[in-house]
View 1 (tube, one colour):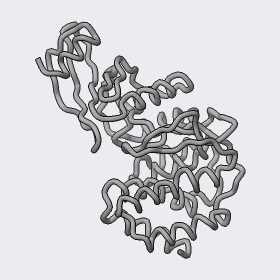
View 2 (cartoon, one colour; view 1 turned 180 degrees about the vertical axis):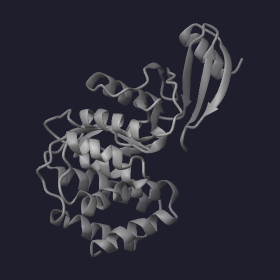
View 3 (cartoon, helix red, strand yellow; view 1 turned 90 degrees about the vertical axis):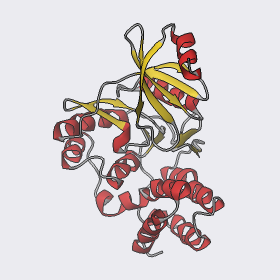
View 4 (cartoon, one colour; view 1 turned 30 degrees about the horizontal axis):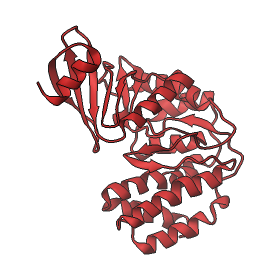
Length: 280
């Protein structure tokens, strides 16, 4: 019996009878397990698993977005209910996702941030609360991740200088009248579970209260959603002018910097392209 099988049996009172690998991104080993009592679960092994369970629990408690229930949450192991999915994100799923994500974004708080720090791609996300969205985005997201990438020697100092200059002038494009909304924080296709034209699960959250546009921008970076999603979302929560033309690129500097910190390479050029577009 493997160490994983032993821990699962001890925690859930049933032996593992079958195992298969699932996609788990770059920081964790993820497996689908079938138990002797017929249950199907997911076992995720990595670091920070207890924090991931806490974020899933927060979403379950404060919203109606579907998330897996944690069955065991240790720092190195997370056991969760298995959500049967695997279908492509079609127009029907985009419509359903728009309704669920718009409802998520409508959950508000007095300030931006959160009562605890979170992670994205295994990297720390500081969430010290702020009343100003522009300040929160600049200090807790944009410049924080730029500094992380610089310290890892994956962001050139010359690009850091340009980012700093841009950060000093965000008021040219970003107003400070946004209302904090709860966001998932990492809405790329791999974290969205779809079955029969419906969104049935969101996984790997990186939650905080932010301007919901910050999340919408992220979904455009890797083409998570298309026209059907944005048409329905806009009916429920109208998107202010200038988002697609300007602000989404500014907000996408953050996930690009996450990728620079993790992988370097061509993502630096993507950051430079946006900087040049905004005169830096």
